Amino acid sequence: MRLRRLRASPGFRRLARETNLRPENLIAPLFVRSGSKVKKPIASMPGCFQFSADLLAQEAKTAQRLGIGGVILFGIPDKKDPLGRGAYDSNGVIQRALKAVKDAAPELPVIADLCFCEYTDHGHCGVVKKSSGGGWILDNDATLDLMMKTARSQAEAGADIIAPSAMIDGQVKTIRQALDESGHAMTPILAYAAKFASAFYGPFRDAAESPPGFGDRSSYQMDPANAREALREAALDVEEGADIVMVKPALAYLDLVYQIKRRFKMPTAAYSVSGEYAMLKAAAANGWLDEKKAALESLTSIKRAGADIILTYYAFEAAAWLEKS
Ligand code: PBG
Image (cartoon, rainbow, N blue to C red; front, side, top):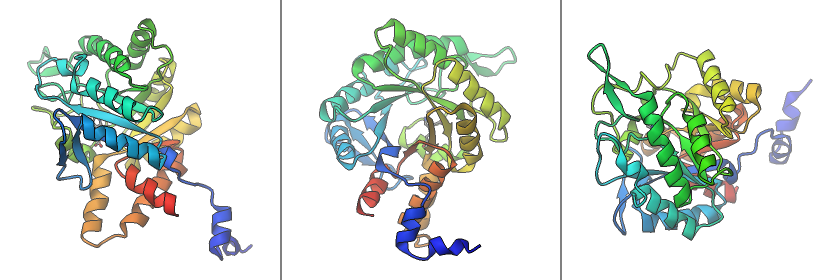
């Protein structure tokens, strides 16, 4: 058998290609802050910016024009407090951004990330309380209450999809209920089902100005060593009503993208996180990698593993590259 026959020409390779990456598979994460005409570079993520809502709306138009599948918004509020009130303020930075993006690009699916770490002064993903041992823990149920408020507020502001990312037990069930009871029964939930306590989030914490003020996130995000537990997380989110399940990060966790897709047969997303992007950008800036090839190879691998939807900071560049190829 000569397996090389179908590799012999570009035409054969195209014909025999099993995985085709498309712009509509990609979701662009975007950061929004207050003000107007703001486009503030993020040092550890070259090519990414914090935008004010007016310029964010322009980005959304570009995304729509490039055929990108959607955008996911992260807000950076002016003020932070222990309860992350900015997250559920009807006039908050994310609510205003959602409205601006929906006005500018009505057909583009707009996802609201639902977490509190950008909004709390301590930088954790929910309400923090003292633990009996003298330390601190994330208060699960108090955080669920705030998640309900935030989901309602985001849906009211125009979010097409709500994406809870705090890794609080019961978050999908609670948000589903909050949406159903507030006239948003048709708003889907993209669940960060298996989100790991990963070092690859480093640059994001610069971008969203959200590093934890004390401790780390390993009492709520998952241990990178655990695969069976990731399947339990996904099973629970499916049972609680998730419409899309996501694995995060992507490249170091492709075994889970594969297993979760196979087992649950759900629309499956993978989040290629800030550190994955920063590694490629840094290597490319040094001339150590062909950036376009390396980025498209990474994204294609994530799709090949089973992801239908890929969140990536390369969304704009990749969509433009794919348009030309
Ligand atoms: C908020 C959140 C984080 C990311 C997405 N949503 C940071 C974190 O959990 O620390 C990381 C995304 C990235 O690194 O690109 N909880």
